[in-house]
Length: 349
Image (tube, rainbow, N blue to C red; front, side, top):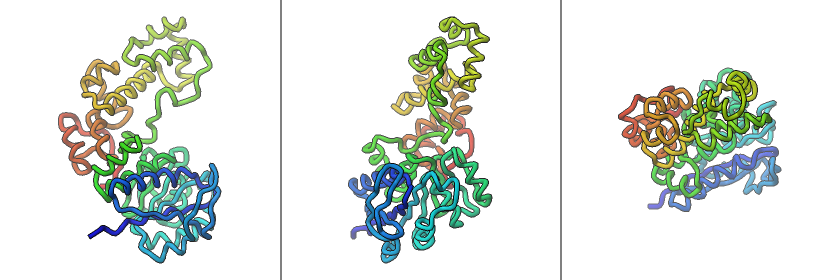
């Protein structure tokens, strides 16, 4: 007997970010191509197409028409305005009708503000874009905001971080519905992570701030990025730049908010992440990224990512945000030889 398709409803409104809908929609569409029973409807309060931040988005039906059939999941996208003021009635009115009828309710980015305004996040854990996490916590004190999480599930309500985190969220839903193997095939097809390890604070060392205007500092940073495993001690970097150790250290602090050693460590962690993601063994990744040994890399991963290298490597096999035995057998097996991941599990238990 053919399984009844899971009906995913996207609640569109003027001003929303288009990728908050189209990103997750591509995940569900690819999953359907690979055999998962999904169908979807993009609806709006009045059934009219909506104007998004990047152009018009076609709408399939009025929101109230969706109530005529079963609803598995309602997805609420975000917009810049949701973080600064009340949600528009074109969003709150249909959400009030659709949420009680759905098995799950999910938000992307600042869509969490609309869920909070509707009372759906009261007493629950939730996340949103890192830039707006403090505002969410301030406006809605009954919400337990987790500012560094990529996505959070608490009961039937799911929230995710900024924009592309909606893809992570959709993959997690596919894994819950159809299994890790199919979700992994979807991720491969879309050329995305099953789940990005770490949290929203995991920015590339080279992208944490504007490019430095100081030519000598820029040359030092380029050298670190080009060869993370090279000799990047402070004296060596100072000698290459023609600056004193004190001057170079001050430039790092003033322009990057980081010590030279801290910046080099971040670049090496980033290089090790790429190697581990490509299937490199932990010891080999430590050597090639400049750590010299497993233990120094493990300590750096603990400081920067909150997980061990083995747990990081294992996370590429599941959408679960916690690499523990209860969330993924493969993750537990891979990490068994090391200390358990550092930090709290952000996934639903």
